[in-house]
Image (cartoon, rainbow, N blue to C red; front, side):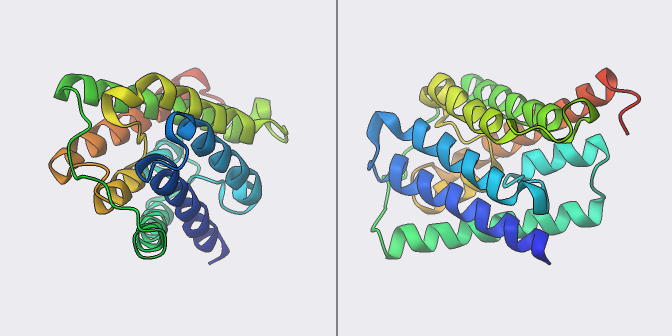
Length: 209
């Protein structure tokens, strides 16, 4: 149960910061720094308990990599989506965050590419810095993961909104920061990127089971 509580809390704070700092405009152009920072500290806070996924695409990558079973992955996904729902409620009913509901996708192709690449980069870094034998016991994994999201948000955010996380996409749609009609782009792009990261990790590390 402690793993799922940790995933709920970490995802909630990640989505809450995105809601207030980005959708609500509290951080404006510096929102990616706030988002990468909260992810970094939440990974450090909960990584030793749950692995600090806070993202269904990362959990999918870890599932493909073989470090979690399907039952565990499903429960992680429930906890992560629950965290996103809690973040939506806090952002909306306490901090009055309400977006326009307009699409932030420049084009379907660019949106898919941005979400796929950002999610792949994130999952690839998580697998190699937080689950690989060669980096076991390191102290930099949280910084690496947070900086990956920050860099990808600065790079791809203008093309897709920079979710790289299905739970973030669901929370952002609820806050009317993303358009519901675009949700499929985030689901396919994020989960596709996470799946490929898991496949490539296994190809590159055949002896790391």
